[in-house]
Length: 134
Length: 80
Image (cartoon, rainbow over all chains, first blue to last red; front, top):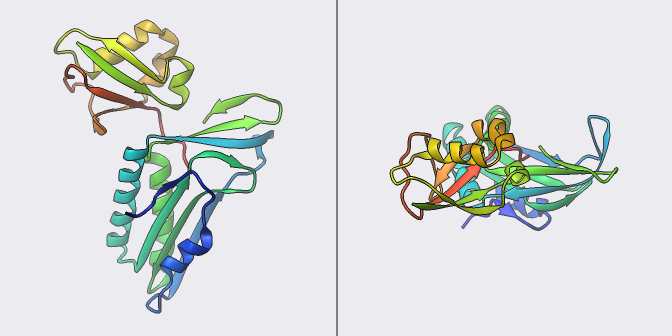
């Protein structure tokens, strides 16, 4: 089974290796990272909560739908859950196709749709000790 | 009838992560939401924009619930 949700650090090299082939002309990688500030407020780390069975189903539908729509050679998405420290990747989207245009468009679609639909939630923990759900 | 409700993310600021709720037999999702608002009126604004799933399928507010349904109340996604 394809892995969409992980509690461990995302292995970017492994994901790129899975995507690579001699058929592709363009490979697009998006890495969503945890930054140290939000609206001027210092961020210590993030925690992501998930409804895992529904999130995996949602991501599967989004990725497979994009792969078919843009006739991609490869499409994959992985979202990290649990604690994610500053500078670490929280989500990675990889798309590959014969031409770059399709890979770019599909990559953005996958990320935007996951952010809008997949049941994953982010909680920000700030340097002043407070926290909030986003 | 009794249903088991799973709350996520910001909803846990208002309710336990899991809770049993007693509803009138034949009650629908809208009735469940009204019951939750009654329990904690401060949750109303968030509950209005949540999606609701029964047995892991997203359903509408007029969906009729059954005894022992597992209900997942999902605030707007904020992944990425």
